[in-house]
Image (cartoon, rainbow over all chains, first blue to last red; front, top):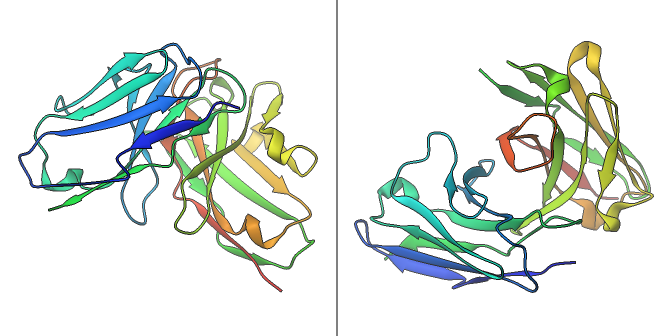
Amino acid sequence: EIVLTQSPATLSLSPGERATLSCRASQSVSNFLAWYQQKPGQAPRLLIYDASNRATGIPARFSGSGSGTDFTLTISSLEPEDFAVYYCQHRSNWPFTFGPGTKVDIK
Amino acid sequence: QVQVVQSGAQVKKPGASVKVSCKASGYTFTDFHIHWVRQAPGQGLEWVGWINPKNGAANYAPKFLGRVTMTRDTSISTAYMELSSLRSEDTAVYYCTRDRKPAVVTWFDYWGPGTQLTVSS
């Protein structure tokens, strides 16, 4: 089973700042990695798939990069609605797994 | 527009079984795989498995093999997840989610609101 590690666990930033979230895989997942956003009491929402493609309706301030074992989700300028938990997930093989999440909260 | 509606919260005793439903609308039900993902209280996300509504084929995470069964009823565009031999650790919100692309397994795009399962004696 591929283990995904996310860092940092918590990121405290102010609106307008840049957020950089990391996801590392225990073995190569090629570009088979996605990012999801989850707000309290809500279902997750797909942000980025195949490492760098924005899902439908996702603002351009969200971008993804990386391949192999190291991936990054960048939010160029945080909006108030972006404070949430972010999960990475791979689909390189079974079972699909998620990272433990990074919480982006207001500083 | 695509909508995914799930059955309501359930409380079960240890050792019992539960069956959660997921009704999809706004697209051709048999064209897209349905995945199930769960989230224990205050915890992260865990993939349970998927079902291909076209032919009923399913694939389960090893952790759930022997305890989970995914089925579907194409006449009412509904997928089901049944989990047996319940234990307290199965207490979680169970989400069903539709795949992003037709006919293949990719990413989890449209999500239901989740079904709270509580396992308690």
